[in-house]
Length: 166
Image (cartoon, rainbow, N blue to C red; front, side, top):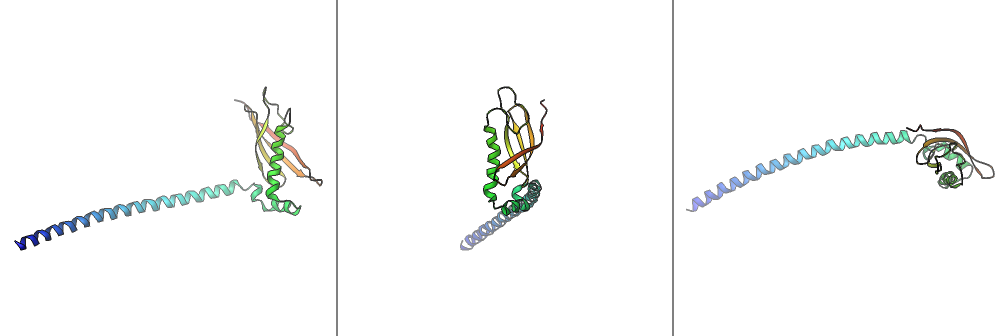
């Protein structure tokens, strides 16, 4: 009787070990597969991130914030660029508040509306591009700007266009 109990215990233990082995092997293989999938996704995301970083670098090429020569131009004149850039943009946006037609936008607005400058991008220490709209018509401007010796800001419209209305 004692021998049978030990034999049953041995068979039960052997089956338990076999079950544990098969189960752990399946879990281990599943985890390895998931790890490989995550490695592939990680490489894909790294490649995508590199592509996006390159694209951002290309898009920000004509940008005052990344143009050391333009920043040095202002700093050599004694300006704090971190304060000057928002000031220039604010002065351009303030022109939206003038009564009547916009002083820079050379196009008349549709009835009951006013052309307003929406977005401003400073390209360097002399050039700005901006877009404008009255809610129905829209276009873009190319401006030059300068800070005179008496610290006045002057904008000069160089080129503009109005998108055709469909």
